[in-house]
Image (cartoon, rainbow, N blue to C red):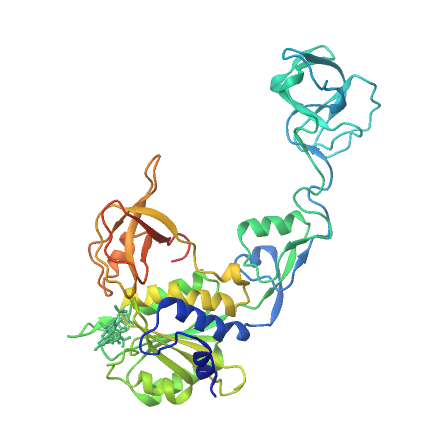
Length: 437
Ligand SMILES: Nc1nc2c(c(=O)[nH]1)N[C@H]1C(S)=C(S)[C@@H](COP(=O)(O)OP(=O)(O)OC[C@H]3O[C@@H](n4cnc5c(N)ncnc54)[C@H](O)[C@@H]3O)O[C@H]1N2
Ligand code: MOO
């Protein structure tokens, strides 16, 4: 049985003619996870941004490495704080010296003595509490402060409270964010081992499509999808292989597909996948690979082709093919809903790092028409409302060819499969674009 047929047989609700978005996601998770790219490389920390960590990173040190002060103030022994002091009780201590950040203070301390201390400075031995300087009155070498404003241990950061030596700091499969780079640097590491970049080849199909620079002609439109895909894939940290625009000729389509399978881990095509398509794209895909052609119960992005195209050189490691619908917004929505999580899995991301962006709740500014029985992704603009849930206003033009409404929007209102019309003021789920597209 082919791989595609085996996965289909394994999924309870599989019906190639009518799949819901959850079944497509479950299918793709089964298809791509075992194919994840395993090769690794060592890179400098700056080159590691958005790359996928190859191995668990165990902390070689504790962070912070020593107990230190969280405030500018005076360090003292918290045992001096009386348990049931009256509200106006204050402590007066002698200041024995100053502890600066970057070196240990090793002076001698008597009872009833404190050390002036700066934020980040090591706690002097035997002292465990810091009173911030704004609570203090200083008179010569005496510091006086109200005892009831703090408890023993306050304003002290413990060694290892961020990370303990020997503990896992980051999991393999983590996609390295700016915070992750900072965390790795805090461990003193300047290089890190990551998965090699995923190579993604893409091309457009359709005889009515024009390359940039070509003279406009009747009935033709410029190829926008290749530029959208370039942006989406580059943002994802992929190495992109642009195979241009391929006209509706089986030999050229076949040769391009094979080149793509040879040069890349994944292939994305746009156009020619709908059931009624009069061109050769579907036939060529079917001849060369193990394919499924779907009509997904969603809008936009209904036609979708998915499969495996064996590489002519290494037939055991096929490229994953995503045949996206040609309509420009359908291409983007199908990418966000299915291709992006699948590529993240191929890159070796763990489940949480490959998950689609979380959905947020917002109140719909107006009514939204929605047919139950399919998932709709409507372009909308979300704005903050002080003291209330954010509000989302869906764009007037939701046609899957209307790319300009993608630019007016900052998110997609996700109207779920069984959901019907939405009333003004009703809560809806929204997928915010920020950082994704
Ligand atoms: N009888 C049916 N017709 C259609 C169906 C259907 O189920 N039955 N589905 C519709 C839906 S939904 C979509 S989406 C499109 C997708 O069709 P294809 O993936 O085969 O794409 P094309 O027909 O090649 O193109 C659709 C549309 O998009 C424009 N396009 C294509 N490529 C590009 C590009 N690179 N840059 C900019 N624009 C592009 C193309 O000119 C067409 O207007 O099918 C519906 N029809
Ligand atoms: O679903 Mo098509 O993808 O509506 O434009």
